[in-house]
Length: 272
Image (tube, rainbow, N blue to C red):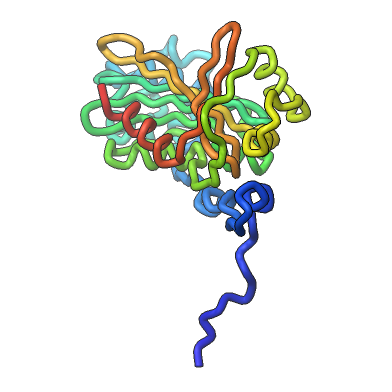
């Protein structure tokens, strides 16, 4: 007889289980088991500058290449540019969104290990992505190896949202908070600086959210019609996504499902 009973019970999210009074399976590791993956080359600032300089004409001139030997070498190794500064056919393809962009999207992120950023140029069919270290790399404490580097990727629009969600580490969570938590911005700033900052509430669900490691991601979109109002989330790990509104005086957190956060991301990447 085939034994279909697992060797062990799934791990429980103990804090969430206590709050609801029921056994809730640990969900926090699901996104970590499917981390962001890209085969694109890692480029320094010199290489990115040369790509941008060559995008319009297909060529980075002598003065543009001056002092940027390391950047040129990286592009040659990646097959994007030849030693004379001319874009290869592949280089012409991946830089097309730089000259025909319908929108540019910047995602700025703050993690206990440091900050990272995603820059996206979008045309009618594809997107050029320049990615700093992903959420998974930050979680693993590997940020130092990517200092001053970005990873280039070229993505078709149908796949873009999933690629970005993977880079952000979006995944399922037990989001038990309700309503909105409003508190002074100075408290928010202190919480960013230290997880030991006391929560401005006695609600167990919000205390759980407050004590989780925070990954803050904010989205900026620029279109031909102008800038779209910036928005962002606090990803509180096992406690889920919380829409963040912050100004000089007050900060507000509102719980949303991971699915809703993903839909907001899709909208930001497609509606322009």
